[in-house]
Image (tube, rainbow, N blue to C red; front, side, top):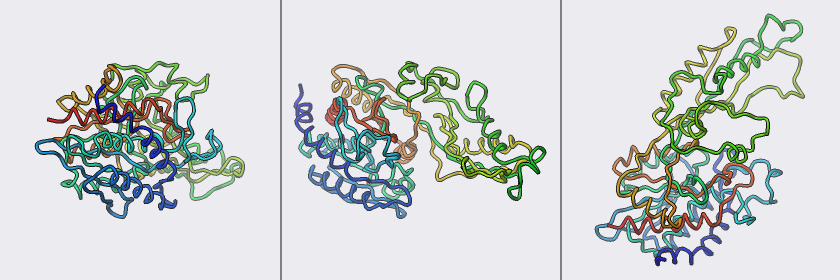
Length: 446
């Protein structure tokens, strides 16, 4: 066993303690919430990087956004530089009644897993970077820069501007983004495709105001029914997205076990899968359309009236090979062309557009990563996977650093449940992730 592996394993008790301390900070960057914990989280991460031996640490922000932490460990002569990315902000906890612990920000261990909001997504990513640096006593064999973001879960509204403003500061030969997942706890992975995303508000209007449903119902339409009919056109009878112009990407050789996907997603016994093709194709390389919410009177307090307007928020995931601009154009055209009964349809994008990305995982840096993962997983070679979710800033990294090898690694597994209740981290797998990252730094040495 190498000295690096031994060093990481020796550091893991302190790494876990620091991870639990970070989880205690409810760093939620959503609008309308107290952002002081986000700043506290940035300060805590900066302190950890100072203690790890960084030659420089500071906080960066752009356009009034939340702070990101930057740190630099200069490269020894002739060695490459690696930029390590993660984020310390987290999702809101949601319904506390659905958590199996009284405080989601206090880590609980059960059956080989740590439970708590952000323990996997993505504070484990932050601590994997720090664990790798500790393995070398703060003097890694290659140059290391770190960027720990503070608003990723809120959609990274200012990250692109920050990256462009500080492009020279962040330039690196290799970029490691620790915010994905592994195919299984016992099978490491490199993520090579991620879907993009656009969210739109779709508003349907048919009347100047609400009118009595008995006096006018029949010939006069209501907006809720019109909206329901419009939303129904987004899928065909098989459940595939029916918006012309959206792209389908390349398929993976991997496939999901149907029973496993049912269990992991919590599908009810009678519910059926939608769409066609292999499950991994539907999860990773086909577009999706999901209704996230509808503005309408609540059922209990609704009156016997025809509603004049109704609005839905719809999210579209986009396959690699598509672009957010193309998808938005296609979605607008589809919704306007399928307006039922002459209804007025308004489509308004929410926030920024997220492009999908595809990574060509060939070359020396990827060879080093595969070797590092295989060693950390006792000989199990990593597989290439797609991700149905979106990390739009990866496309920005690709644009700004076209010569850099971009490695998307993961601290989560199929049971981590990020964004949901009882988010968790597999303890043994987390140690392997930390070992793999330290080995990667060693194997990137020229």
